[in-house]
Length: 268
View 1 (tube, rainbow, N blue to C red):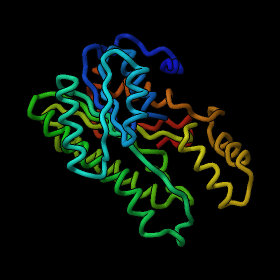
View 2: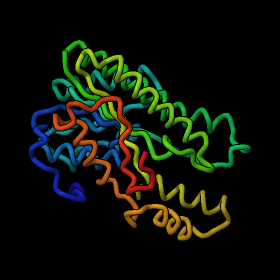
View 3: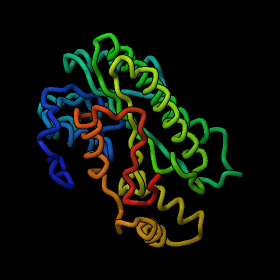
């Protein structure tokens, strides 16, 4: 299986060749596109995912010395073991992309404790654990960079996604605070905020939202596109190319940012 082509060529001047990256939630979707985009710049990538078989398939397709690592970002022991495996398998690490995430949809007044906890355990606790463990290593070695995947829903509360929005708002708060704490060490921490991205996760959300709103799935997709000034659904490569930029020296004076990659849905 060949890696998908990027939506647009990534400039070679990003000077990432030889870097070592750990991308979580990288077996599919946005995470896979990020891994592909980094690899195209000469980065060796560790594909982290709770689904080891899928991670191995992606690593094999990627080539270039990519490795697969099983990780459950909700559990400290799993994150520590995975990061140790990355250090051994790649020979080091100087870039973390904390991308693993989940979603469910339900009206706020019908939310269950289990749904709330699931979203926060993966989306927020997962970012906390991976960031903390990687940042300790980066500070000790004197270099490193972190990019977290937040969401448009981290900027604007989304109906039927109140719990998801809350978890992603927390990711932005953590990103800003950690960036300020680590600034003196030279470790940069930023986040990307994707909009309506065409992935397997979105496909599930479209079905859920259609049922909750009593409309067709196509109507939901049409509404997403209508809200997007650039006039189409986002693709994972749109996000991946911005992550590559944030990881590069071209973004050397950016830290603590939540960068919108939304096609103009939200501009603040």
